[in-house]
Length: 68
Image (cartoon, rainbow, N blue to C red):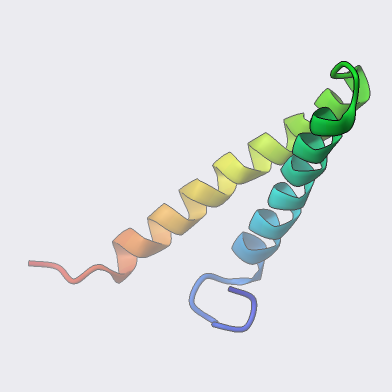
């Protein structure tokens, strides 16, 4: 997405950072004895960033779709 030029840098970085934050949460909860508040604090912005990324990508895909 970063080098493709279709979606833009904001959408690209939002998706990358959001996915990394959620990955840290998933790995952290998999190996932790009990989910901690720190991992939830990491997961919240990651989830919100992924929702924003989905919206940005969907808007761009609708704009790229051919009109009939």
